[in-house]
Image 1 (tube, one colour):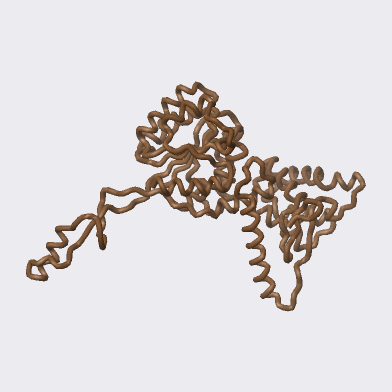
Image 2 (image 1 turned 180 degrees about the horizontal axis):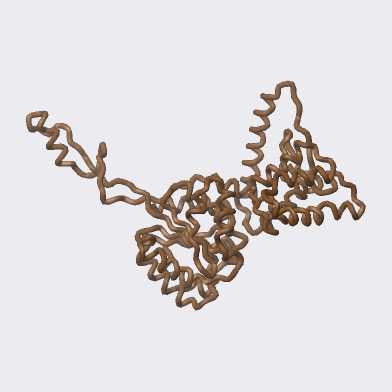
Length: 381
């Protein structure tokens, strides 16, 4: 629920991230402190339940919830002073409402157990309602607390991995083709009369999915949400391979094995050095082919490329590498967040060079488009 001041207020004793606390956490993350949504939500809850009413308590609540090493303390102190203490020096009081957050004590009832249950259901309903309202909102236009809510929803997406019909067969009850060997063997029990016929059909196996994610500066508004989607894919199927690229390509499959999405993304950001840099899609595809594609990773795989197609190098090289990949991969799906704009046309040189070799060209700019993408992947499989 949003109050008159535009801040998120708590319901049933549960503190929703308020503007000042979330802004503080955002600045810490921007300064290099590895923070996930779990830490930010824990910080907001701690402030709410502790009944913080002065800056010293607020400072130590943040130190306990957000800081994991002594090296981060100087950065924490500097940003805390800039966000909270400077306001006090300018003459504002150090009350919770004037430093940009709101707290409320837990609601006391005579039956605590029933209240906790009702509160949990209420919070779930509020979260579902809020996510539903954000399904069609572009990732680039989200506030930080809206982004946290949607990232949790993306992490919970149920993704059906693509599948394929194997050359190996398996026994089935009906359909397929007759299993003559088994039928004849069983007929020996009935004096050679084939009474019970057996059947076999091709078995269904998971198809390898390879995801290449552009993390360059032009994709900065979408890369984090798409990484959460990549984590959901990885959790659904062990045969998913994930790479990040900017000016070069990095395999991050092992980093995304972590069950917690925030911990997985923190590991990826520590491993990938290409964040917010330039875009060399052709060179990155060449690096993928040289390091992994020729070894069989691309062969008969479903290739998912997430990029806006804004190539810095010669687009002819990008087209040549896409042609080679199209001959190896089963299908190529290109996810371009810019396609979410109804006025968008794939006129950029890089996107135009890649387009002839793409089987499915889809958008990925909001939660609804990612849900549609899961349906596309299932249909292709």
